[in-house]
Image 1 (cartoon, rainbow, N blue to C red):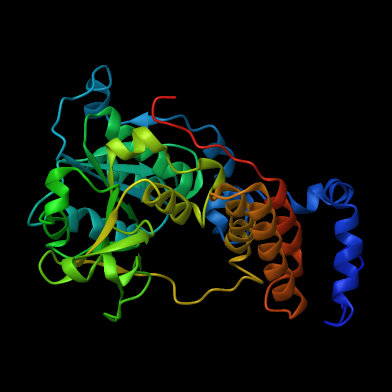
Image 2 (spheres, rainbow, N blue to C red):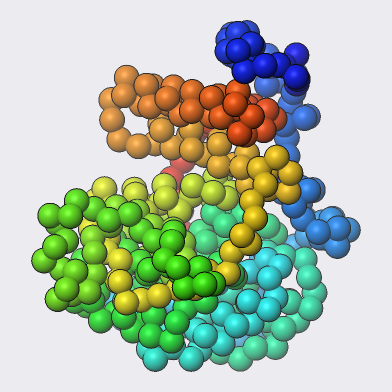
Length: 361
């Protein structure tokens, strides 16, 4: 690709210089190669590919129960919580998740499921369930799916959105531990997050704590830690914060959109992690950026570079931050720790300028 196949690490910087000297021409020349469509990505099962044509024709669909309430926004309190579930293909864990949400010691006030997959057995099961609101749409990635869910929760009058992928299961007291934090009743936080464990009980993917001096006083008495960002799993988002500071960036599609969203909110107010609220994440332990997971890695590379321009700072600071991130990915590619075909996505991130959208915009 770009004459660099088989290049050694010592030759690679010269190739990158030649490549970046005419970025736009290179991108146009490789447009068809780089233009990946999620519906045809290699990570999708063949059954999904066979039905991708039908998926493009899907409109937003609600259950009959939901259609009856579409005309009005339901009046609910500021402490009302809607659980937002984004479903795609993991049927078994989706069923476990819905059951776990209904069996919470403090159940959510509503369960809203956004289904973006093509399996009719999953769609039929969701439609048959009582006690949940079902929305079907074409695949917009996690970013677009959660935008739909959060907007729907706000439209239906909920004060908070509790967010889940379909491979994460909350422990029975997860929501109760979140709402028992004193900051919840005051409506102060931008968001509240949970501690995340893997299937073996090991804590990982948990939110990054803020400066220790800011949470020593809270960790024992209030059982929470101030944080500066969080992932989607079990994230409880304040609707008032979303109205004021915007939704997740749907154009990110997947990867980095949760960090962009939560760090943006945390710049305007506090976020906390409730250390006794636990989410178990049944993540696929294998990750192959060169093969089945290239689409994820490509979006990660693009979005990571694009975030450098969205974060606060001077024009010069943003430029330097962007250059550092491009250099980071270039180094990984030169050392063959990342696929060469990710380089156009890195460069795309330099020119990628998504905008923050607000509810009901």
